[in-house]
Length: 231
Image 1 (tube, rainbow, N blue to C red):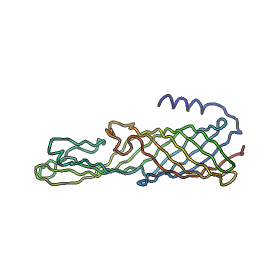
Image 2: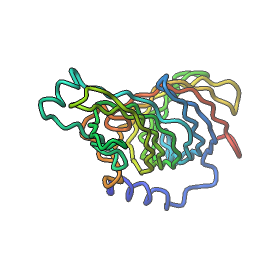
Image 3: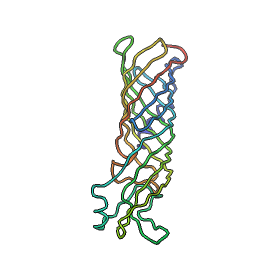
Image 4: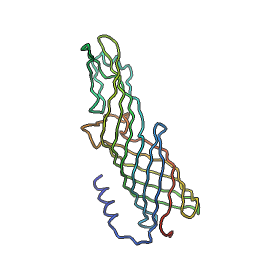
């Protein structure tokens, strides 16, 4: 990832001509459990290639993690861990009874920044495609609703925890573009970010079942607008 960032920074440092096309854009993406807003700035740096930078904000999804025969697992000595440092494996109630974690429901919101490169190809006056490879950095706030089970008394209790942490992602993105006017373009497509923790002291996923761990595809729609002179 360091090599990718160095390459992008070197490209940014090149003095391109003032005639290079520039676009501002906004899009909405979702996995049907969230909605995320991205505002970006794009600059054409060479025929069919561009630089892309921007900001993101919004909800980042929800997942419910449970285990087959979870209470049986606990009775057999299995210890269920969560990826969050704020979520304990066991808790003790006022009667000094121990409860063990057996399932959890998590949702997250966040904001961040992106930097990437892109390629575009127009097939006609009105239609084309764009491909981006974006690096994204997110500050995330998660709310985790946890279920705990007491083996001796066979009863349950529930608790809510909050965790703040940082994640990164490498996001290939492919969209179909439809020109609405000389300056405005509508697009729709798919983003397939691969998430990884940048803060393993607070967030250390052990499986891609966790939220913001591994590949998580989004559908997106958006608009871009050419600023300055149109080439």
